Image (cartoon, rainbow, N blue to C red; front, side, top):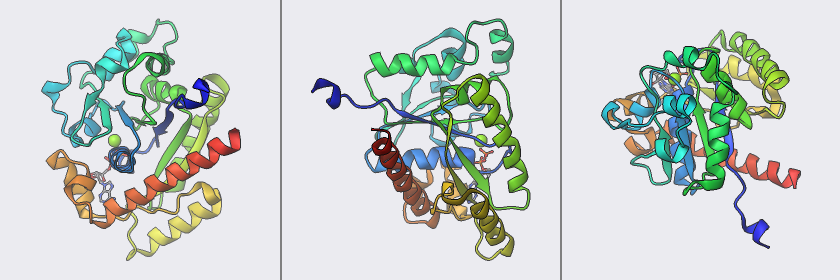
Length: 273
Ligand code: ADP
Ligand code: MG
């Protein structure tokens, strides 16, 4: 039937952790690239005013005409704001250096926490490109932008840096997710946790990984992202690690993660059908 041939809506994943420097942006860029490399259509939404995902994907400030700021404050369409990247099948809605105005501008607005959700839903029906995945790169704080991300998301994908305070930051994130479920988005799930910057020579890395697995079980992806200098160099060339150096251990780990994400998504869809 016509219905069964219709592509399902995109799976919207908020890449989130209130701790800074844990690998959110690196994961959004490289998981997005890896998903596109295995044939998925992907949109990255850069919700961080720092704009690291935009810069890291080679989108210069001059080419950011319509930004995420315009989408959430002005109701500009996703299709107007999304720009192509050098990676086929990967688009990005760039961030805006002046996102500070969002809180004030939306303080009295209708559905102020649902601006991104409304924009994505509208696009699902009328846009030209039907995305399979939307990855939202969240800022490292709990503000209106993060709430917009979590209200729009089907699930949260949590990067966890393999260091001592990793679990402490998680407690805070779990509270936030619970709060969002109760107020904005009851269907918000946890897609999975990915261990980042893993250093096999450091005993602490292994210990943190074990603790996280003991706590979250199979919510933790098998793919572990190693600490890898090629991964950290790539953004300064405006390229994802997978383009900068496909063979490096970091790129290969992100490919493995992408396959796992797709596999989980397929099982979830089958279970829901
Ligand atoms: P967040 O978005 O959570 O603040 P980033 O993705 O910007 O974190 O990562 C923080 C820093 O760590 C950046 O300088 C980034 O290049 C570096 N980094 C992230 N992942 C890796 C990795 N696997 N190996 C080496 N450096 C990494
Ligand atoms: Mg970031």
